[in-house]
Image (cartoon, rainbow, N blue to C red; front, side, top):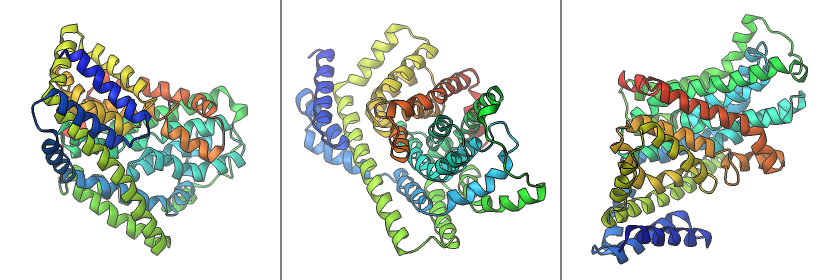
Length: 431
């Protein structure tokens, strides 16, 4: 049968199942079963059992539930309150003043969370009421938080990087390390945007709090020490080669338990809630990954990835044009799907094309993560927009408009990575 007809039937099946409310993981497995049963000679039941078992029992994937649990533990601690106390005295001298706590707080929490939604909720619970009380413009508070909280996907440990690493069969440790410099650059661009806005609109920035001496600032910075030590232990263990990503995740869990116990926020209720929250989130992700693995196998038997790669190769696109086309594709897809679903749905088809174009898969992983970050703040299915709406009770369109400048900053960041690929590749090459 013509490949176009087969593809159309599978895409139609996909949207019918998604539209009827079937879970994404089951939808992927269902479409894969339809494709294999109708368009290949391989028995679908046998292939599904082997593939789902192989996906679920992957040792590489063990890091994922551990990092999720680490984020859940810290989500229920006094970490955000401590970070605000430690950061606020240092940013008062900058143009834009305490708006920078959204950027710096998100950057720090991203390094111990791995989830942009958790970063947004945790930092937002602290900064939105505090900055509103001090008279900062609401659109700047919400916009800077919505943009900066997407760093939860880019700064290691990142849940979505683990998913991409498993799908693309590349080193998760190298992916983590590759995200460090782009994450810092993006955070600096976000802060730079606030500085420019503050210099152009000095009347809209509330006056500074009581100025503290350098010694007093250092005294307040003690609140940051525990989280900085936790970040250093996790990333340092991976970068130095002492631990794999999975072992570093275990270090992170133990460290977060010690940290929450020392803050007095670890009790049976918080421990149980963190474990249940991590279990629910990981089960959802694992089901999606299992369905995607079966779909990838099914498409391989039908031959769709090869035909698509040949078709794209026949278009004669340069690597730059291919990346532009993929960026637009993922941004549009992000209007309807969450980041993890986007990656697992498309990697089986996209990766052969990317490899044929000679694009490094580690670099492409960081590119994909930033593009997925953009999708976190695009309506109608931008997860960060939903989190912000729940905290502010504002219209989703108002929140999306407030976040729009940060969307364009991420577009510029992607261009920077294309012009200077060493921003991604240098640090992993030093491991």
